[in-house]
Length: 148
Image 1 (cartoon, rainbow, N blue to C red):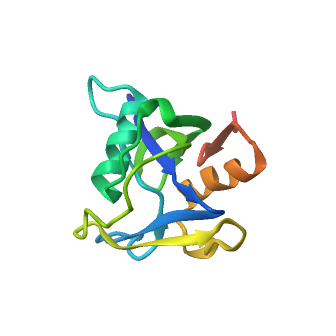
Image 2: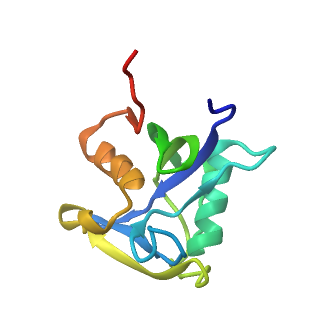
């Protein structure tokens, strides 16, 4: 039984119909796959502040938390990881040009047309949020077994 849930924040940064993705550098099964700027909520910060912080730490852009729009919540469990709630935000405005500020965790940043994303090479969890952005879905679950 899981006795806690992590809270992840994910940020969609869209410019002219293109989505910013980072290619993950890690020693697990996600190495080389694409991901959104994201991270964990820290004690004492709101979800919007955490999302703005993560975007700045990872890709160097500055977002006022008031310029983030929550559009999707994902309740995720599985893959041997702790259960989590993923909060997906769209950055309505930001300043700065994205740069790879975490080369130890990210191979590269790249803009992809929303209509031509490399879906097979995107980690499934953030892909669910990206798909929800396109469909308007506000909630999803991944990995839960609902059998009684």
